[in-house]
Structure formats: C-alpha cells, structure tokens
Length: 326
Image (cartoon, rainbow, N blue to C red; front, side):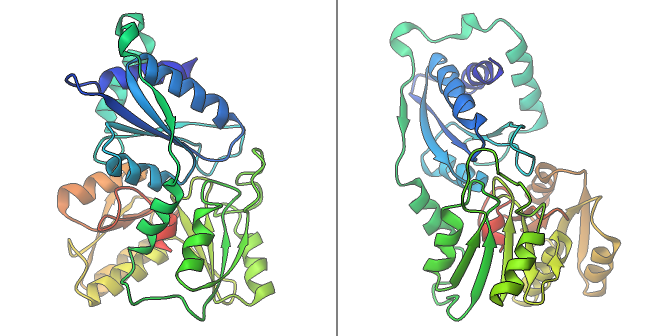
C-alpha cells in the first residue's frame, strides 16, 4: 500500500505540462522486489505516468538510465547493504541526482494525504513497459569510463556481487575489458542478498582471492553503489583509502577538481592528514552520500565518498557507483 501511494504521490509531484511523463523503475534481487515493483507501477500509472520496468539492475544504472531515457523520475527498489527482509525506495530526479530533503518531505506529506483527487482521468492512465537491453547500456557506460586504450589483460580479478543487483553486469564489464574473472555471489535466490557476502562481509572474497591467487578482489553491496577492495595479499581496503588513492592519482594527472575531495564526518583523521600533506583539502559533510554529492556539486569537486565504500566520481555519474570506482 505504501509503495503504491509513493508511486501516486511522486507521479503527481513530477507531472508538469501536458506531455507524457515517464518513470524508470529498477530493483535489486530481494524477494519483496516483485511485490513492490508491481505496486509502484500501479501507483505511477494511476497518476498518469508511463512506467519503464528495468528488472534487477544496479542503483547507479537507474540514475544513468533516468537521464538516458529522458525520464522525469527514476526509482530504485532496494535496501542497499541490508538483509533481504528489508526493502526501500530510492528516488532520482530527471538529472539523475537523488532528490533533496525538501522535495522528499513534500512527497512524504502527499503520501499521508488523501490522494484520490490526484489520480489521472480514465483516458490519461499511464502504460507500463518492460525495457530490454538495459544491462548492455550500463555495461557500455561502465566500460567507457576508462580510456579506450586501457584493458585489464593479464589481470585475474575476483569479484563478489553480494547475490545482488550487479550479479550479471559487473562480471561482464570486467570480462569485456579483458580480465580473467572469478565471480562469487552471483546466484541470487531472493533471500541470500548480502548474506555472508559482498562489501559488508568481505571474508568470502578474501578467501577467494587467496584461493585463486587473484591480483585484486572487488566486493560490491546488494545494489552495487558501494565497493570494498581486497588487495592481492588479502588485505581489505576501505572507502577512505580508495578516495586517497584516486585523489592523489587524479591530482598528479591534473584531473582533480576542487583541490581536494569530499567525505563525511565518519572518515578517518588519517585521510585528512594524507590529503593535507599533499597540499589538498578534505571537506566533510553529514553522513550520507547525498550530502557528499550536494557539496561536490556546489563547490565543483569531482571526487567524494564515504568510508563505507560509496565512491562518487562526478565526471562519470551522479551517485555512488561501486563498479566504476573499482
């Protein structure tokens, strides 16, 4: 009921003018995703919005496809790194960025009101369509974030997809870039998402890196917007270390904007010292990748993130993208 009401409220809030309005709806691999997907489609179409249903796909792919398909809104059904019993609804505006607190609170107010008056007239009800080929679009998008002459030939990469949204696309991207890929966490059954695997439980990946003597291990979470790296010796590398590495490398290559990076108050003091020793700044925000992105946009930074592994590289995307960061 709540998901349907959210669909009606969001559909109403983003209706402007007389043109056909569109929403893209993606999800991770949780069992409840089937139910919530149908409820959201019912809500959006009742509000007169056409729904494009994507199926299981990473959160950053929903943000990218919202822009690519010229949609008015993007929705991801996911509870990210939480167990399968939980689920949630993430909303993206037409520019692919998460909605502001202000707009979200307006939508929450609308959800609680009687929304029958907002429903579309019979002839204006929206249509629903399942979109094929979205995986291929995201695979191409992810590959294009690297220069054309860069390949992963000769690298053995272990990847843990957390039995989540990236279980198909992430191994495909690495393989198409030339890596020898050893994938685990690619058998979702609706209840095993994030279960003893993925970025929340990198022990499984550490064991796999040792077992197959991988050059690097990549652990994603259930909706693939965060990443933890395991090096060739089995050491776990967190988001702070990844931001430091990217920040320093990009600064040396003249690619870093804002003379530093953006992180949250949870980030380690060591990261701050590392950046200042190299003449760069560390800006801090409240906890949450949305606040990191807001600060990056306002102050023209292009690297930011959280210790938990949300890495935002705004040259390529509008939200945390575990695979692109890796």
